[in-house]
Length: 153
Picture: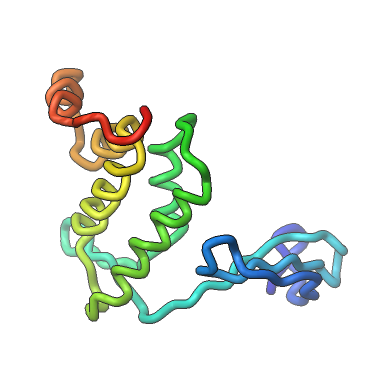
């Protein structure tokens, strides 16, 4: 594993343990070049997934990109990071087990919306504002007016 600090190719695993949800292995590593310590995560990948974007673009599924999007929507909300992690892992698992190697980005957006709807109404509206491309305050008002309070928020 390449060191994120100095780029050295070799590192030594100092500690390994499963994550709280059991979906990954967390490894603490130490670089053999500069002795810096860093953490990596090892996850099961059932199949190589590709996301079909608008304009016929196709790119590999990026779990970290999905996690970032959900985390941004949930920023400064009373949502435990583990719940966000479980939501993203659940979406990834559903995508990998559906039997297709390609998935439309709209489907992923719908899955995130559904997950956030049950998690936090503010995070749900934030994500929807980007996903549905709200252009005016009226768009927020109309959407928020249709959202029933789900969870705290």
